[in-house]
Length: 199
View 1 (cartoon, one colour):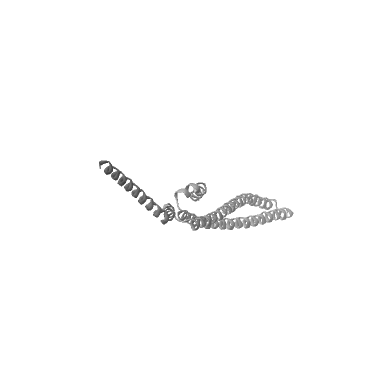
View 2: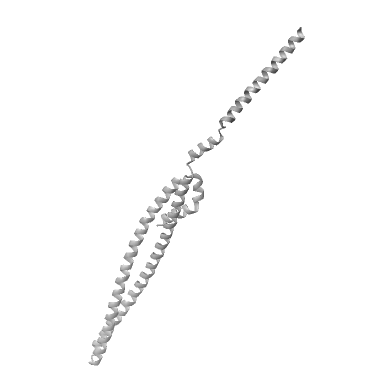
């Protein structure tokens, strides 16, 4: 349970940094794993709770029986006193004292069982709340994965955006052709001028 809690805490506190280094698909798989672990953990806790409730009921029945026995011992002592049988009355009162001490022990165990049951219920409620949070997180990650392309596709889209349109390519080719033609024309004019000077 401690290991699972640490994993859950780490997931919710570091999900932003994980979002930068892991894809949404990886995070969905992580959440699925946590949900499976939580299902197992909750099943174990529910089993412990059921055992605790059964133990609490057994203790309560034992306390009720011991209280009846204590009351009966007191009534027996009264009857013995009415018959002037002090010795039997004393023995009945001794048994009543033993029963009362046993009742105190059982009551203490019963109260501890109740406290433990409440703690289990609190932990189960907390885990169920975390379970719902995880389910919500999974839905968010699935939506994010569906809305945004994968990294490779995204890179391809970016590369596509940087490719020049066909018209722009034609303009580039045209500009290069014009530049080359101008250079040739200028050189041709220089040669003609040089020939004229020689004549």
